[in-house]
Structure formats: C-alpha cells, structure tokens
Image 1 (cartoon, rainbow, N blue to C red):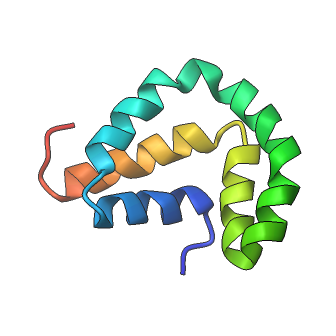
Image 2: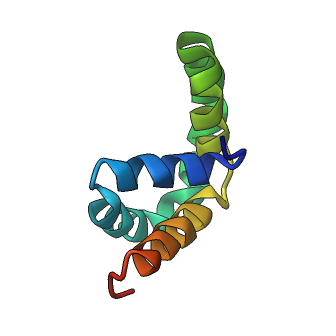
Length: 86
C-alpha cells in the first residue's frame, strides 16, 4: 500500500470514477489549502480516534498544507496514464 496519503486518495478517486470532479474541486479550493490544514490540525485527532488506522491517513492528508498540490499531481499523472487530456 502506498505510504503517501495523497496517493491513496487519488487511487480511490480514480477507482470510483471521481478523479475529474475531484481535480476540479481541488483547483477551486487551492487558495483555501492553508486554512484547511489549520482546520485539519484540530480535527485530525478526532478523525484518528473515530476511524483508527484508516483515519490516520486522512488526518495526515488534511493536516499537510502541501497535500492538495500532491493530490492534484497524482490525479494529473493518473489521467495522463489513462490517456485523458491534461
């Protein structure tokens, strides 16, 4: 299993056919990334306690200010690998 939470989320979005809408939403919310990471620092312990090990990856993703950029890079790479225009 990949260790990068952004890779895990990108793979799951791709598997569910939600990569394109997720990419659009990620671009729309890029200016909010620092605020989302601050929120994640407060919500992260709650997510970890409720969801256990699976929640740890999500909590790490929302706490990292650069995670949104990594998620977009992974989604772009997956789209190019599948022959979608980037």
